[in-house]
Amino acid sequence: MKSCKLFVSFSTVLITIAVLAGISLSCSSNQKQDALYKIQKAKTLVIGTSADYPPYEFHSLKDGKDLIVGFDIAIAQEIAKDLGVKLEIKDMQFDGLLAALQAGTIDIVISGMTPTEERKKSVDFSTTYYYAVHGVIVRAEDKEKYQTVEALKNARLSAQKGTIQVGIAKTQILGLSEAEAEKPSDKVKELGTIKNLILDLKNKKVDAIVAELPVATAYVNNNPDLALAAPTFTDDQGGSAIAVKKGNPELLAAINKTVERLMAEKKIDQFVTEANELVEN
Ligand code: ARG
Image 1 (cartoon, rainbow, N blue to C red):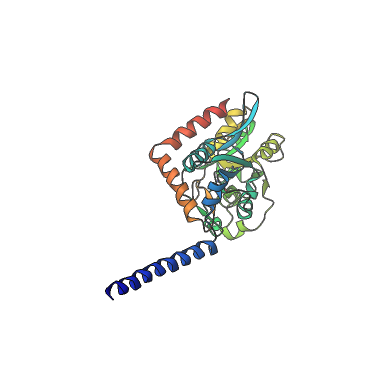
Image 2 (spheres, helix red, strand yellow):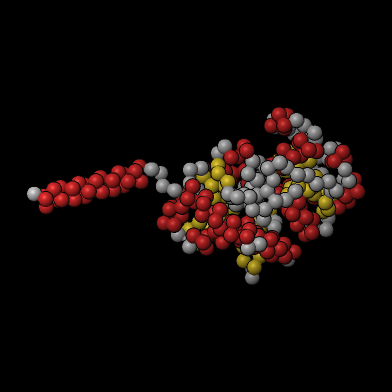
């Protein structure tokens, strides 16, 4: 009889294992899979970026080929490398990036994006990997005119559509309250790309563009007819982070692992220097 009892308890254990396995199987098939698995299955990480933002991301000719380069791209390449997948870049307007992420046409956004409280309501952000203040691009001939914030108040201001620089122009230059700044205003012209803003500046349709200072500096260094206005601005949230669709903790953890490794190895600074060298060419 003893052996019979042993048999019963043994089969009970087997049944229990089978039931538990069944439960965990059905659990994982019911649950939405982490975006990490989709990337691994596709063997491709698709990033969305607005490649008009040197040294973060920009177009550069190499051996007659148009490439998208920049320190954000270098970071994305490291993430793809760590995941063991290849990198695909989708270049789009900045104000369309988060919608593309929600729609699933891209896996992540890396585009010098500031992790604002507003954006955090709809997406998750990685560790902040880079900090910058904001600067103002003006025409070289006007440089002397724009030495103070007060002087900039009289300029026809502009910023890229959907960016925090629109808010900075309204609150820190024009002195509007946060609530007033929420409302659309014709005081700050918004265009989809920095490229078109630069054209407007050169054609005297606007007088000043607010952008992250490294970007403003890159454009000024490449355009002798442009200059930096004296004032710079900071924002509370500061910095750039990678956006991931909410509810993908495994992808977010994998991204943070790479970002934190790069920061510890001082690689981000190196990528910024390398990107700036490419801008000069
Ligand atoms: N940091 C700013 C923001 O998040 C501007 C980023 C613009 N990026 C770009 N690639 N054009 O609003």
